Amino acid sequence: MNFYFADLHIHIGTNEAGKWIKIPTSRQLTVRNICDHASREKGLHIIGLVDTMSPLVQQDIRRMIDEGLLVPLSGGGYRYNNCLTVLLGAEIETKEPQGGMAHTLLFLPDLKSMESFTNYMGQFISNINLSTQNAHMPISQLVDIALSHQAVIIPAHVFTPYKSVYGSVACRLSHILTDRQIAKLAAIELGLSADTYMADRIAELFHFTFLTNSDAHSLQKIAREYTVFLCEEPDFREVTQVLFRTNGRKAVSNFGLDPRLGKYHRTVCEACGSLDQTGVSARGRCQACGSKNIVKGVLDRINQIADYAESLHPDHRPPYHYQIPLEFIPGLGKKAMQSLLAVFDTEMNIIHQADEGKLKAVVGDKLAAAILAARVGHTSIQDGGGGRYGKVLTKK
Image (cartoon, rainbow, N blue to C red; front, side, top):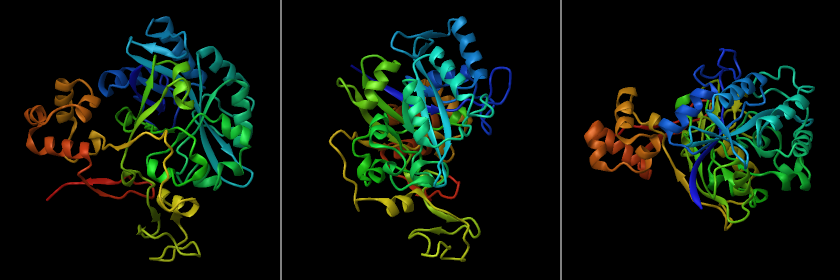
């Protein structure tokens, strides 16, 4: 079996004719550009495009198949340029009767099955051409529909304060899904503001594979988080086995942001900007100014609903490696980035493999030291929250 870098949550901004698919995102995020960038510069092996329920996107995919750029795989999925596997997915928004909305990722093996799913979901979604539209149903109904189409189901960024199962809907999956439905979920996506240590404080997540995905809204954000899969072939069938951990297939590493860099890690008062380490008061007001305009951070949400004071990892849980994407490193601009790529080919090589001497020769001592410090976690970070990313602080 082989190791594969996988990022299963990448958005499409526009189709090739320039019509919006995901608002707001970069217009550079077309299927063609994503495939090229993910393989050539990022060094990924498997990607999930989560807006392929749109008929406009399906037209672009069909065109690339006709051009021979996307080749159908016998196990499902498509091979781009003989080096990248593309999985077809959708991110769908549901509205729960008890309040709150949640996002869920669904994946299907090929264009025909995705087109069939689109035709069915069109009766519930007002504009099927746009990404992440409200399906006007609870997640329990969506799960049943997805299962009837043999889709792979993954709750998305499950702790973020907006539009996630734990962040805005319920304290437990068991409050909104039946035991049968929970058993059919393939994996859990952690989101940028949480890590394995935080998620493994919740007992009902014990049996799930955790995914670290980018949720990219620009080409640069692709692979800021990713998971390493162990399987025979990078195709839909094998990835499904990885997620359910069958026949020796499994996720072997999670590479993600230090949660402090996530834009919803800490609770923030929108009125005064206070970053509250201990959580809001019992009245739900900011402890600094008394405002009710509070965006609860993932850290405080998990502290509120956790079963365990400390994480309890199951035997199957792989290591979680904190990764600082190159774009977060102060002083590493576009010119330096292009120089690095010219020598090391992909960002994966720069982040994981480039040695100190070669890095210094390309970008100098200071940037080389910053890249290596980020690789091993020796960096100072200003916490993110309230919709603002954290920052890597430069040493004085």
